[in-house]
Length: 193
Image 1 (cartoon, rainbow, N blue to C red):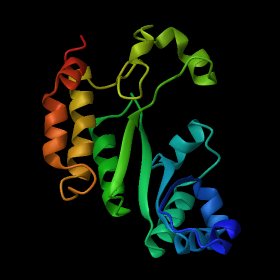
Image 2: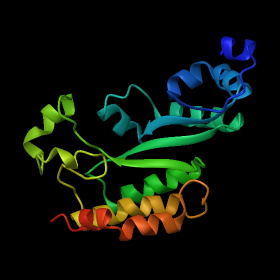
Image 3: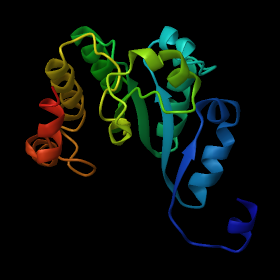
Image 4: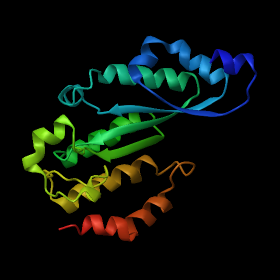
């Protein structure tokens, strides 16, 4: 920050940050905004404390919400990453969608919880894997059994994007989402069985 400011470097920055760091040091957001930070990617991960705890995130929903408020107060665009659990019900998808709306998250990124090889989650849930095709370990395919029928799970997953971006054509328009849904890639997801 100090070097950029002292040399009067005029750039636009898109950064990654942690909510706990933002909440403990809100002045950092203000400083970086003053030298060109436009956007910050933050891992919200979940909308319930029990999910954060289950994933060993050492964070709270309240902390994430405070970080988003600090970013919004400083006019920093927020790209929020949220994990969709294969155990989600239709109600869980709806609750996540409402949470995103309530926090005014204009750029959410929804990804499917994926146990990557070499992680504790992978070792813990290895026997539950529905595939060992590592090309499907891409955060958009569920490689664990889903509570909902697979087609219904993916329809709900795609609807998260449709609802989140219905009024935000700057980042991802509904036409773009519909094109993705109708593309071969998402068609294959829905026809994976």
